[in-house]
Image (cartoon, rainbow, N blue to C red; front, side):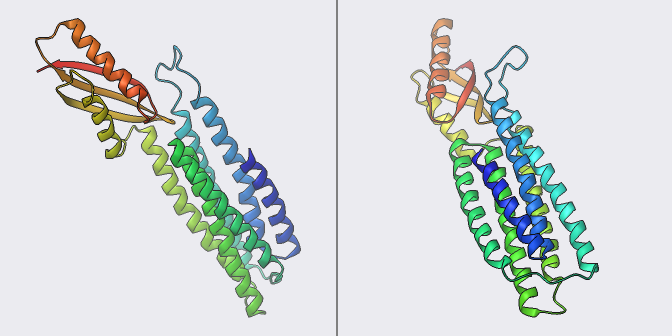
Length: 277
C-alpha cells in the first residue's frame, strides 16, 4: 500500500513537471507511475489469494496466484513500453518546444527514490521467496531507468538548445526498449514458477540433508521440489531397512515429513514414499 501511495505522489509530480516543463519524457514517465499503482494492486491481490489455506478445490493451496499476478504485471509493462514508444516517435516527428531546466532536479529526486524503493522490495522478495515482489522490484528499477534516461535527454536538450528539442523524446524511446527487455525477464521468471521449473540446486540439497538426518533413513532416491507461491512442495523417496515392519517404515516417513515441515525452507506440504533397501 505504501508503494501505491509513493507511485501516486510521483505520478502527480511527473505530470506537473512534464506539463509545466514542456517535456513528453516526463509525462510518459508519469503514465508509467500510474500503471505502477495498478501493478502494485495486482501483486497485493496475488498475495491475498496465495495466502489462502488449501481447500477441496485447491488441495495444494493457492500459491500459483502469486506468479500469475507477476505475469499480469509483466503484461502491463509490455503495454507501457508500447505506449511510450508510440508517443515518443510521434513527438520526435512533431516540432515542439524544448524542455525546461527545472525538470532536471525533479527527475534526479525521482530516480533516487525509485532506486531506494526498488532495493527495499528486492530485499523483501529475497527474504520471502516471492516472485511477485521480485518482479515489482524490477519494475521500480525499470521506472528509475526511464526517469534516468529522461534526465539525460532533457539535459542534452537544455544544454544543446535549438535543434536539440527532441533529445528527451529519443531518451523516452530508449527507455521503452529497456522497459520491454525487463518485461521479458519478469515474464520468464514468473513462467518458470507457473511451469513448476526445478528450484535452485542448493534448496534441493538442503531438503536432502534434512531428510538424511532423520534416524532410520539409509539413503534417498528421488527428491523433487517445486515452488508454489511463497512456499515449496516436496515429493521425496526415502530408503529404509527392508526388514522393518510397515509401522516402523510409516513412522520414519512421518519423521521425515515433520523434519522438512519444521525446516526453515518455507515447505508447506511433503509427500514421502518409503522404499526398502
